[in-house]
Image (tube, rainbow, N blue to C red):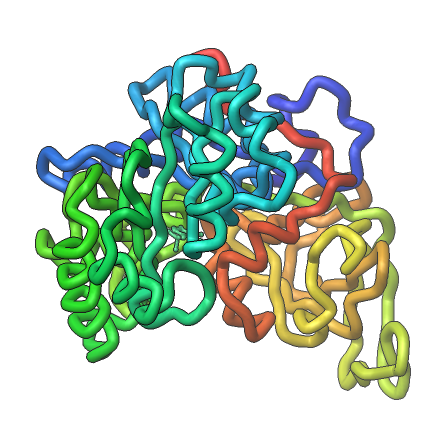
Length: 372
Ligand SMILES: *Cc1c(COP(=O)(O)O)cnc(C)c1O
């Protein structure tokens, strides 16, 4: 951990984000084992939860994943050439006037209202193109609301002539194993499938996979667990960490009472201390709410973050670390084996999803397992 990292060709970077694609692949296999024969797609929206959708999708496609979900049409357009033989589904559905782009790039819209269904039918005419239907089972965000489902039940011609690949729905509380919302949504989904038996059934996100076989249906749709976030908070994480973030020590200085550190003088030094400054800040997605809460690691030595997170810099109290491990140019682990994404999220008062999707663009990025 100390000293320049030999895996980095040019040691001039202030912060290095290492993305382990082998770990992403391992996580995909762990989920498949849980699914006991049910296949799984991969959700790679938001640039693969911040890891790089191009790298993640290419790696998983090489391992046999043939179905990807993204949120935006544009995300699908960018992904298309990287996984030419895979299905790409667009969760946000069909925006007006965009239907031809779905056709041109062979993207499947997840239709979420009768309006979208009618627009897609009108666009396709006599030559149906694949689509999915999203049914709202209690999230109240996207998908056919119950009254539109009732209208289809009363008049199935609404969906006549559609080429439906998947009927999907999304769980709102799957990370809370005991939430009564889970079985309630499952029952609503099963009821919706009686109205919409066409195509295959796709229901579970990462956490949903861990709710049991009733939730698996024909295809799972995990995102965050692939990237190492614990799908069942409060229990041991079965997933492997996929990102390591290390920041380099720029300077080390002595400090003592009554000095204070950083903007707003939010940290008061109480004893003779040594303070290390690292070039990572909230502009890199290292959230300001980590101020005076987070910690880093130098080898096995835990070093608390002291003072506010500023735009480009953070400061750590390295008083307890032996001098020879802690000099300008040495590295502090901010996210990694000692400090998993979920722990950083807890320090920041948020969820691992937000830590990952905020990962900055200024970091030097190194990918492990890219050519595997
Ligand atoms: C983001 C998303 C997923 C993936 O959820 P995770 O909790 O990251 O596994 C699945 N389905 C839909 C509709 C989503 O929006």
